[in-house]
Amino acid sequence: MKRQFTADARNQLWVADIAYIRTFAGWVYAAFVIDVYSRMVVGWQVATCLYTDLALDALEMAVWKRRREGVDLAGLVHHSDRGVRYRAIRYTERLEQAAAVASVGSKGDSYDNALAEAFNSLFKAELIRNKGPWSGINDVEIAVAEYIDWFNQRRLHGELGHLPPAEYEALHASPETPQPALKTS
Image 1 (cartoon, rainbow, N blue to C red):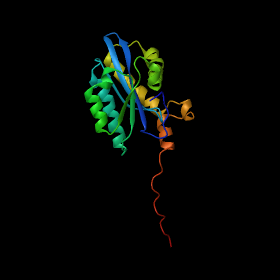
Image 2: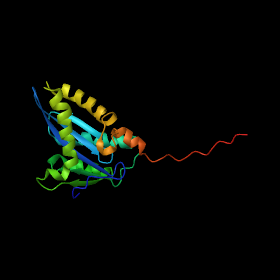
Image 3: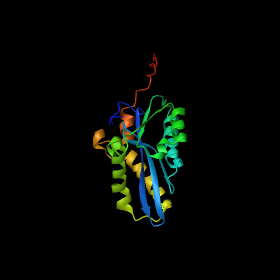
Image 4: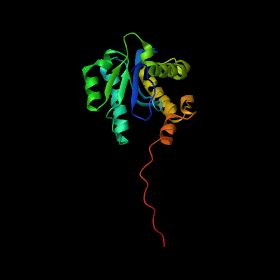
């Protein structure tokens, strides 16, 4: 990746990472997949275990969401840190099935996944620290769902001209094929 965190269109580059959340019942983990072009969180999952399924479920949500919109993900670059979940056989096979290209950062260098790390910092500052303390996974999961909805639909992003990701994507969507004008006599 060489710290390239820009994209000219949706689904060219996704970044992924996992955030750790302390609760009264123990640790909860949240995995996110973010489209670099629009900063849209396209996939997420919350769990009490750091197994591959956590990251894989977030990826599945992202793939499902974009495919439901009729998007071909061939050539998409999916970037993450070198975490074992992202290098797991099932994870890399799923990327291959989606015709996406896996990319991982260099060992021990958080700057190689800076955009995902920046999202995690925002997530922790805007939700986890402000709304806690947290009882357990149930209240975290509800709060994350509400946060992602707010983040994607209403949160203004300076990098996007002070638009929310969903509005930015809608504004920059490729125009549909124009329909022929109706003849009127």
